[in-house]
Length: 620
Image (tube, rainbow, N blue to C red):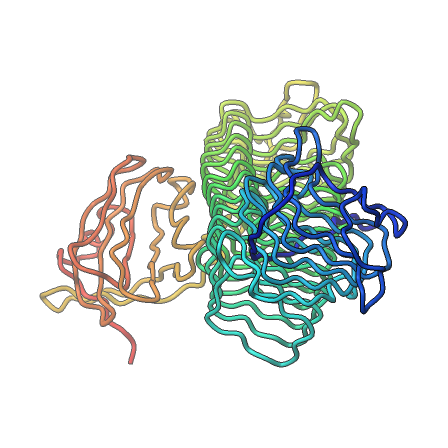
């Protein structure tokens, strides 16, 4: 079952005249168009609509609306009214619901949170209104395409910025527009390029197909930065700033196969929401300072969150009721929880991700999940199946091939957790290896986990310790692995970087070739050596490649061995070199802009016979 929320739209403008004061107007049926309810004329026909004109309405405390028209079928005009004091965030100064054929023109809204809201209505005309608000200025809500069939002129403004409302466009490109509100409704194959929203309502795509939003710059939206409602195939791409939005940076509701890629989502209430939508891909984005980076909910199926950079979000990814959500090749640092999964999630997968300096790495109550090849370092608890207090019964999960390094607790399994298989993980330099208060399967295939502090013997030489590892709560690993050499490669994001053979040449002509991992995407450049155990990092080299020359600086937080860094120009020319101390707060950079930087364990280049100044020999 899908659960979704009908969502918002946009708009505004103004007109001023001499107004008579009165209280709020509430018209809840055709029979309510009376003089007592502010109607000054008209008969309710297309040629002679009912007129609500020239009123000044101050919304009293505790009331939701200044003018409310609901459940009507006859034509009406609201003109030249001034509404103030609509200060309940649940309401609006002017509210229309389940109406048709109405007109709102020449009205002014001031000293209010929300301005004009039109809900499940058709054929409303909006023009020449001024909506001066603290919240959402112009909002259209609906459950069908026809609920967005309105004539909204750009003479309506939100806080002085135009409402740009496009209905029924096909095959067009809208370029370089800015406003207080931009809406695309019932559009097909439309591109919106370079749109700018600053302190407006945001961008809404409703009941459209094939819309592409490129290069949007959205800051301080009073609602969602971008709302995608019942609009399959929408693409949001290459938008480096979607920031400080009161709700989500991007909200996807009942819209399958949406892509959000190459965007920066900063300090929103939520970075991206996926609600009741299938096949959504959230890829190559940066998330910082959001309470939640990505939220998956409402029965969404097969959401893929890939190659994301998550920094200082309270929850990097939060997965609620959903099926088959995938989080892979993502980099998380300095969060309360990197990936938080509630009990309504089935078949999640978290893999090949690096998580450093956290409260919890993965906190899950899901069932039939797979958690593999992750590197989790410096967490209070690396992977935790929390106590659910009878609200969830996680079962059938698999935890394998993860590296839990320098955590206070490596693993924790609560009392409701059953049937979880745990094997071939490296539990490394953790203060406490694990606690298991449930009924789970350690070493289900005869091989358990490797523990750096295991002191048991292996009398028969089969690679399995003779003594089990006992955990708090009563669990035990009956088959601890003696040697970590079985572990396949490097965990986390670094293990997904492609390799390249580098050739360095010093001033004397000495050349050395060696393999290096290439960090050429934001999430790989962000994570680098962070979290890697010293023994896995001591022979590793990472080449950082930037799309254009940069003056970026490097830090060493969560890097546990000293590194040498060499800076290069785009032609491989030497631009500087320094040694960076392990796990310090200092920043390191070059005097000139650089295109590439090579990090290696300190002393490695000298040990290979190279002098201080080296150039990177580029293949022709």
